[in-house]
Image (tube, rainbow, N blue to C red; front, side, top):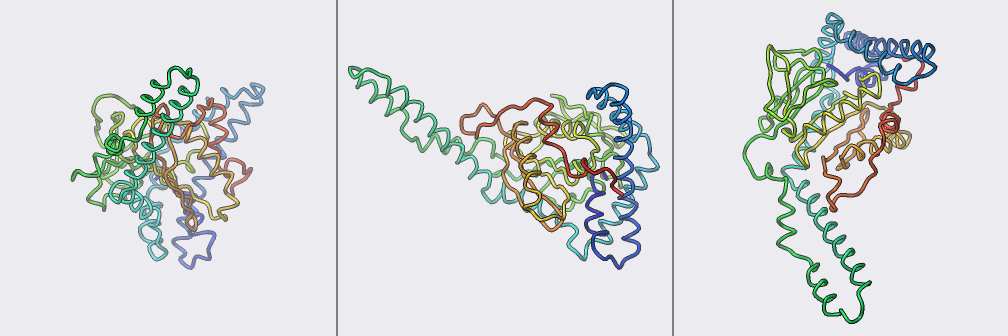
Length: 359
């Protein structure tokens, strides 16, 4: 159920909710969310005072709070039950599944309706353009007596339609195959994507709301080169590069520190296939322009983590982002600087991090 607290606030507290049960559930979720953040801020303040602002001490203290949080099973189970009940029984009249619908529609657009193919075609054209530019620069420096050689180079870099077509098919094999796309739903709660038969869903959560969801702390998930393994309703390991889609629906807003968010993003990149999709949903009821700096910072961070943004859309209470997993060494991919971890932590801040009191 990780990540749902802020959405509950947006949909049930910021409007005049006439359903007292929905209001009660939203308040419970909000309190859970706020309490976790307050615990982290309290230990970070104490660690900073004892260690003169040593950021490594802050991180260790926050990790201790997170580990204690994982052991608070009663709190987590109460939160999971509340979130499932609110999402499935009280939000339907207001298209509460819009985040799930947006994710599904984006997956279909990308894998079935040509979005991936168009993106790869752009990469191929960019690759050819850069090759032509490089050849032209090299040709400019040639002596006039080697004009014949320059002519041969120009022929070499001429557009090759067949190679462009071949490049466009790389990584898009799932578009033409009948097998379901493999989707990892992190912070799933009750596995809403199981309703779509064309998706092979692995749903994970700190505290599953039903038996179709596996227990997993994604911040410390074991990513291996071997096949994914599961036991006793939980995740033992997940296979590197084995998923077509990873979904972070309200997950990052639940994480109380930027370090935990960064770990999740790194794991997602490891688990995705090349050109796979990371779908990120973040709650926010503000106007899109007021949140522009936040979205720009997220885009910069994900670009440095070997993603490129495929799509962005602002819904009423949500920011919806789709990122494509890329190889930055590919000349067809737009370049981006590899940022130090300290800068990534700054970029992955969310508005709640700056609030002194969430109550």
